[in-house]
Length: 431
Ligand code: GDP
Image (cartoon, rainbow, N blue to C red):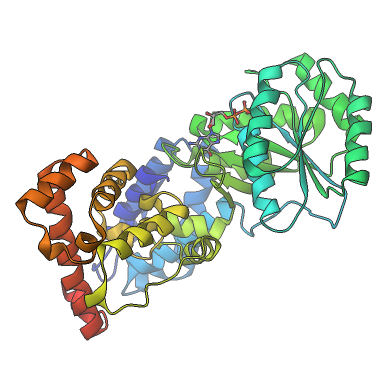
């Protein structure tokens, strides 16, 4: 997430590290670098300018120049300002006890359908009784897609008919709310590749008939701040209460997220962080700012661990087996991409090399190797002689070198864990 922007801001600030006092010229040079990295991340021009101006003002006001740790001081000012630009206080859509009807609107391909299903799963997990509505009266394929996703998350899908009148849809919807005790209706509306007059009219009529309690604009952040330009039209024509920024995983440079509040004046409620149905996070500006600055995000990590019901192994380090490693790995992967999780650990992103990626496929290969072992081999890799290793490589579709590497890594890891255990972590840091 925001890999390049993150690294460039940190590099700019790092140059001040260990410098003792800095001059106003040093500060300005740092701010210039930050401004350029924002613009290159496709952040709105005005946002970048204001951002830097505010940091300068605060930095001078807080006597950063006098400070003996200027890098840390600047970092904390940048953190405050980043949080502010991302929206300040975290905001969530209004959720009443009953009668919640949320519209998801946006261009085709922005991730509306996927996010309707993600929201259904998210709120179902919180004890709600969602209903999905496939409201595209012109594209049966779009309705079909939602039906499939609804089945996956175990939430019923109400499908409109071709050319169904908005009044009819509204009436059917109310029946479901009343007779099926649904308390959160998520309406996946029609989308087009571009803003289109007919679409706006259709959405406005549906909105007038149904009366949603929230209208969420779904925005593809991969297309940068450009994606936000549609928000004005959507807002003028049908009213928008908040945003869902999708595809913040991958190559999103940050432009959409950092420009959103300025351009749209709406809060960002959620972030989409993978194609999978659990790839949804409530949007916390402060936590995201921490991640961008490489400060980690322990709160989100702990929440994910709790949701995945992650359990720590209750074994002494010497007794850990390959089976334990695989089961831990599976549990951690329930929380999302391995690489993203690593980066939520405070300080970790500083230790990882630039462009560091965990290849989730490589993890699958490791798993295949372990699964090709007999239970005895997994418990005691010392018995793995050459012919056993050959058998395992063949069975897992890998090579003997890969098997060797896994066993070596496991041995090293065990040794490291023993050291950590003995020195309560001090040994690790010395390493
Ligand atoms: P719609 O036309 O607005 O309903 O968009 P879809 O829900 O069909 O999504 C378009 C494409 O984007 C699909 O291939 C989705 O899998 C993908 N997608 C949606 N949300 C995300 C996300 O948060 N991250 C990633 N990587 N892909 C996403």
